[in-house]
Length: 103
Image (tube, rainbow, N blue to C red; front, side, top):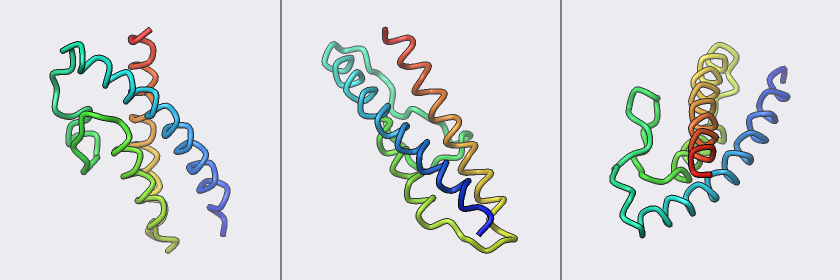
């Protein structure tokens, strides 16, 4: 399959996102205890996620589920990959921005 390398890279990036989400969710828990977390979701529907959470890990889980069920049908695969890559990019950028501001 010609997309094997791309799928492996996505898995690697998801693992990175997972590790970052654990750290970020821990920081969010600290902020919540201090009374600073006053939002219901991290991402809006415009970012393409169906998950609604005030923690990062559920968004990573959504992407992992999508990657596990992605169609290898050649006509469909590029569109599915494009959406997955877009959402993963938004997730990783948001995690990095949160980390930068939390320090």
